Each structure stands twice: as structure tokens, then as C-alpha cells.
Image (cartoon, rainbow over all chains, first blue to last red; front, top):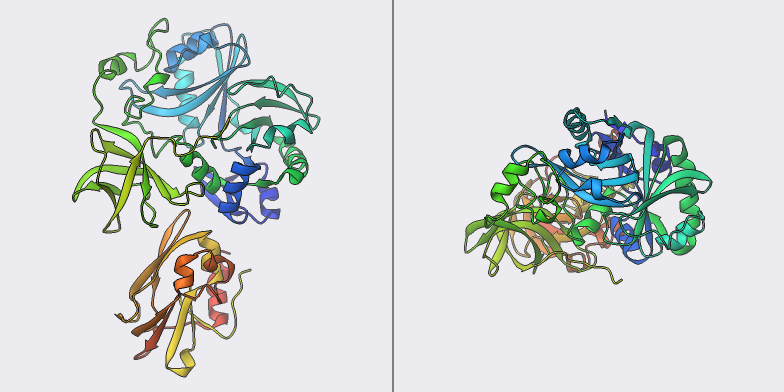
Length: 361
Length: 129
């Protein structure tokens, strides 16, 4: 049985199609997922992301513990800022990709994917054992509501006095939104400007309703996981389980920049990652744009002259490009004459560099 | 509740069939329930006009943002017409599944596959809608 988020009744009253995702009952779409996608690109969308995991590290050595547990240099993060990072195993394989917020000198919040947060929480507790820090999984206490899209700031500004102008990308500040305490973070997974609001469970429904009402004049729509997936795909953002998994290192995924070898001390996966960091990758993560209208999907082989040269990790029709697109791992050096085997038919594809979509600043 | 017109016949694979009682040319599409379950349809592959099909054959496919499904023909015979409009604008499947979203016509030979009445199809789809 899937777990509901605090917003389940709201989703049902909005006519959402609900689906199981990583053990949670989540809105897949409310109406047309294309309309939801376009609302986020052109105006704003409202997402329930309460399935994400929130793990808190509190104590004088919280930063050092994260430096050891993760590949990033989190002790160097300024309070109020956030960082995209990863947790890997001893072999350097990616266990999850994370956003870490530094809430104070001695307090960090690690946001993990729903499918991984129990594993991440266990690993963090284990890896932090010898540090003076308390690791606490508070996923059950927090709801997460995201407002994403070019009108997000205008909408949120009607509900809060917080300094949104001063809030940088990948930063977070505590504030009141519609009179409710929230961590307001300028982060997202859509390729647009936007905010993620971490709030106590009991505030989720009133806050959602307040944002819906405030956003209506701006064209805000509730948006489900289907739109979230196509938005992040256009933005070239990896999804754990598709582009990332424990068999791949951050370097395999083209995200070696998140590994900070120059930070002090050892970290889990350091020796394994140092050994491979300069290896030429066998495959690299690229974008494919279909010439036809059939959609390449997760797991489909990428071919050239009939030989398999890669594999699709995510694919969908792109609203913004008007064509099917995919992310795929493709053999290094192969760029021309590619196709994807779509149920036995070799459908021609053009290789492009990621992302497919970049918003105008 | 999805829309299930009384005058049509249905299949377990969520197609609708019109014109079976005449025994001549039948029209096939997918149901409102199926269109709703798929979400926004982005691509429809239709059979070729003139092709000879048997009841139960996979003759095309419907792709949405999240999934792809095959289209089965519930009747055998010759495909005499396909809806080029729906190939050009697949959103017709969502906006008007029983009208402009029709998919193909078959000049029927032999008996159709087991077809469901509107009532039977409603019972089939009420369990999880």
C-alpha cells in the first residue's frame, strides 16, 4: 500500500490521477500533462514533493561528518546556501544525488530522493558515528511544496515578506509564507526559476491552497510527476535510477565536478574515484533528438549501423522542442548515424549536447 | 466516471467498435477510459489502408508522454480507411475519442472477437477508475 502525502485529499479534489512512486501515492497529472509542462515553462506550476526525504545533521562536527560521508565539500558551504552533491559507496558508485542546505553553523539538511532516503539516512548515521553530530531522519515531519516557473517569484511575493530578490539560486532562508513557518529555498528540478518550500506536515494543505489562490491570476497550475519528469529531462537533469545508479560513478555520469578531491581528509569512495577520475569514459551521457515521432524510452538500445552503441536512460515527447527527446549513454566517439531501436524499428536520432532547454536569464 | 456510449461495442483492450450490427464496415478507436489512462497522446501509428488483418492482431500503437500501448483490431478483414487527422493531431484521441479521434475502418470478414456491451465494459472499467 502506497503512503499518502499530507496533500492527498487536495490532489483528489483536483481530479488528479494518482500513481505509486517509490512507495508513495503521488499525483501523476491533474489534467493534461502537456498543459502542466507548458504552465511551468511560461507561467508557474505547483508541485507536491512531500515524498522527498529530509535528513538533518546537527552538531559541532556536522560539516566534517558530511565532508567524510559525501563527495562534496560541505563544511565550506556558507550558512543559508545549498549545494548539489552525491553520496557514493566505497567503489565510487552513486547511492543517491542530494541537495544539502546549510541552515546554520552546526545544522545541515540533506534532501534525498524518495526511493533512496532510508538508505541515505542509514549510511549517514553509520558514516557520522565517530563525529560529534546527531543525524535525524525527519522526512515524516516535513511536506515539500515547489513553485516553479518564471512567475514564481511574483506569486510567492504576494504571500511572504521574505527577501526573495536577495535569495540566490541554491540558497535557502527561513521565513513566513502565508503566515506559516517555511524554509524557502531557491532550488528546483524543472530548468526554471522557482522555489521549494519545506513546511511542517500540518501546514501543507493551507499553504498549497494559498499558493493556488495567489497563483491563479498568474496562470499557475498544479503539476504532477509526469510534467516534472519531462521538465527535468528537457533541462538535462539526471534522475536516480535512470541516469544514475550504484554501478556508475559521478565521472561516468559526466558529473565529476561534484567530487571535491581537494577537501581535507578522507571521504567514502575517495580512493576508488581517484583511481578512475582521469580514465577516458567508455560511454558518455548525451542528448538524442528524434527525427520521427516515435518516442525513445528508458532501456531502449541506441544503435549505429545495426550495432548497439548505447542505451536510452530517459525519453519523452518534448513540448518545448516539439519532438521526442532522450538522454542516453552512448559510446565515446560515436556521434553520427545514430538510431534508437524502438520495438524493432531503427528510428533515426540526432545527437546533441545536454541540456535540451536552457531558460533565458 | 469515463464516458461509455451505449450504442458502441467494446473490447477488453479498451477499443470501441461501431457498425458491427451492419456486418459490413466497422470503425475502431480507443475508449475515453483508455485515453484518460494514457494521458496526452502524442503519437498514433495506424495500419496501412489495404492491409488484411485478423481479429486480435496488433495493427498500430498509441504513445503518450508516459507510455506506449498497442492497438488491436477486434475484427478481421481489409483496412479500408484510416484517420489521417488523428495521425496528424494525436490530441484528438484525448479531446474526442469517440468522434474525431476514431482510428481505422475495416471491411469485416468473419466474426468479431468477443465484444462487450457498454454495460459490460462499464463493469470492466469500474473496478479501478
